[in-house]
Structure formats: structure tokens, C-alpha cells
Length: 462
Image (tube, rainbow, N blue to C red):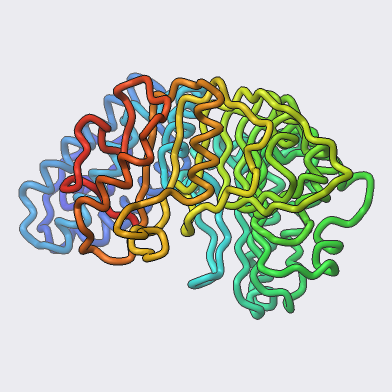
């Protein structure tokens, strides 16, 4: 080989050839070498023998030497890119066993902001997800990622505008391919958000519903209540009416759509609904249910609900809508509930009164999160003295009756203005904790330790 051929054009058989070339004439050679090593990197074409690795190290040394002597910026940049690719072929991660690489993928995915695959059209139509980024690194990573169905088993579909259904044919086809990558046996986590009642049902949603027998976690948000759309979403066919793996269900819709799923008696451990009636509590009844979140419960009291869910540990409730029903026999319930949330994750003050706690005791309750009513309602402050409203009085009565030992209390005050008399705030807190069965120092007011709480360090909640 001629002395004026740059080392960047040398292959592993000619690493010891000499060359002399100015930096300005190196550009075409390094462009070709960059393409060569980029292809090797993408295919994970690593040197497998000691001789091949030694030759590559020699080539790396020569490339590094070129980078140190080259003064032309464009060529210097190309040399550095080639050097990066060459060194990458010797990186230890390229020789990891398959199970170790999969374990790394799992850790990266679980700690990422997008552990699943998301199709959203709220801002612009796109697919995103951590697993997609990993699969685009190289052919080896893509092969390993595609061969592991669990990585493709979390899918969110969010259609927001009517024309999204018309201009996403290609994206829908690609997403359908990703659903196929989840295999036939891996459990699925799905989220379906449909915001336009006038748009046709997207084909990809139909595909997800067809896999309902594989759902393990499902979140369904419908901003419409049309029975026509519900029927099209879940046709009444035997293959579509079983949820044998479903343990976590969230339905954000005020229609009776959730009842359709509950009728199938899935083995739920966590359930979140907008509305639930006492007449439907027996259908919900399950010994496997651990967490239940309801915005509004309608019935005579909470006793039947707690009775049919004997293993329930966490109950979150925003409001109780009392409905007199003389045909319903009252049940006495000694619940195993550990956590009661009355306001932590909601915007409005909870209204849980009118006998909601009749015939209920909570002897095992250890954690209470509750929002107190406004401090500036004149009707609550006759003669300047605070009186707790009905819902709080009933709550305190059931707590005292239960003889539970609360270990953690999160008390939230909702105010309508920043400037409040200190004595009003202190009086309200004192009234709330008066005769309360708080047995531990780990009790909190808005995440501030009870013993350290005062008006000055209070976090106002709007």
C-alpha cells in the first residue's frame, strides 16, 4: 500500500502499513471509515478473537494519534466520531450475557418517565416510550427487546381530537405491530382515553379490547356516556367478557360502563370508580380487593360495602349520597380497614354524612387523611366559635366507637384567603383532635409532625 494512504483506509490485515497524508485530505477516508464502523456498531459486530481485538486496539491508537495531530476542525470532528465507534466495539456492555442485558433494560424502563408505550394526539401525533428508545440503539438491543414480550405489554392510547382518527393510519398500523410484540400470554397494562364522542372508535382500541383476557391493569377514561360507544367498545361476545388477570382497574366515567366489567367478577385488588351504588356492592364483593377509591357512594350506609369486601385495607371516598331504602336490611360491619382517605386526592371537601358510618366500626384503623371545611364560612362560626360540621362529627363518633389506635393523621385545611386569625386555625385543629384516639407521636397535620405543628409552619391547601 502506498505511503500516502491514510490509516483510516486500512483494514485489520494492513494495520502496520505506513502512511503520510495531510489532514485536509483525510476527510473522504474518515467518512468511509465512519460508515464502516457505524454499521459494525449497529450490528454489534465485535471482534471475537484475541487477534482481532489486538488489531482493533492498534487501530484505535492510530485514530487517537490522528485526532491529536489534526488541526482542521471538520476532519477532527470526523476522527473523533470514528474513534468513539471503534472504542464502542470494545465496550464491556457489548459482551453482556442476555439475561444481564434484559435485567438492565427492566431497571431502565421501570425508573423512566415512560415505562410503557404511549400514543397521544393531544399536542401532536406520536409514539413514545423508553423501550422504543432502547430498541433504536442497535440491532442487538432491538433483537433482545423485541424478543421479550413484557417490554411491550404496557400501552396507552389517548385520542383527543376528531381528526386524529383520520390522519393516523400509519401510526395505528405501527402500534398494532407493537401490540403483536407483546405476544399471546404476557399480561397487559392498558390505558384508553377517548375524549370525542363523535369520532369513530379507533381500530387500535378495538385491538386492545380484543386482548382483554390478558389485561392485568386497565385505566379507561371516557368523557362521554353514550351507550352506543360503550357497546362498540365492548361487544357482548363470550371472548370479550372475561378478565381473569385483571387486578387493577380505574374507570373515569360516570356511566355504568364499569358495571359491565365488574359483572365478570375479575380478581381485583385495586379499584377506582367515579360512582358506586350500594345496590351494586354485592356484585363488587371480593376477598381479594385491598384498595378502593370512589368519588361518590350511594346507599344507606357504608356498612354493606365494607361487609362484602372483608379484606379491604384502604378506602378513599369523596362523598356519600344517602338514599333511604326500607327494603335494604342494615348490616353491622366490623371492618379490617387500615387507611381511610377523605380528601387527600380530591379537589372538593368530602361530604360523608347522613349516617354513612351507621353500624360500622373500624378497630384496625391506623391511618386517617381528612380535609376539614372552609375556615371562613360565617355560618360555621356563630359568635366566633368553631363548630365541626355533621360529617366530621359522624367521623369522630365512629373513630371513638371503634376504639382504634391512630398512628398517622394527615389533616388538611382548605381556606379561601391567606389572612386568617391564628386562634381560628388553632381552635379548629384542637376541636378536631379533641377525644380523638391518637395513640402515637407519628401523627401529622399536612405532613408536619403533630407535636411540632403550629400555624406558622402550616401548608395552606387550596
